[in-house]
Image (cartoon, rainbow, N blue to C red; front, side, top):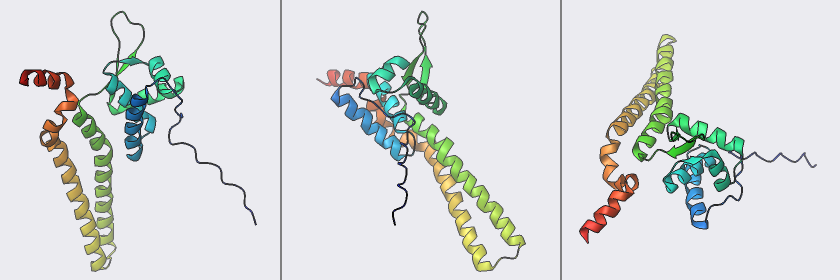
Length: 197
């Protein structure tokens, strides 16, 4: 017996990307970053917008983003608003310019740290609190000591994860700063090469 066909799953993004005006190599870069962002369970087009702004190294208007990425006006508006909330894109306007433009956050560790502290760290703290409440409730109910011991181990693991994330956020800049210098300041890298010649 044949059932009704299942409806197709809507795309993760609210706006499918069109052809756009990117060169083939730019499209590869932008799509690669979009795939990573999608893997991290953000919207793929959020990654594409940030990657294009970072790659071009200049602020771009909504219209430029629409044309370059093949996105709708509403899609770009929603994406840049969400990226501003995460602090990975900022709105700028020159004194005589009537159009708002968007620029990418270029401090990659600051950007990653903000996302981790707001998303992953919040999740771990919430789990830790829930397990603490569950442990208190279980003790009051006189739950089997073996079950309580397992619950304590789960709570301890959440505590360890919370401390590990806090330590990462405090030390990550120092641990990987040298490796990211090339991404944060490309002009200095070029200047350093010419000095060594």
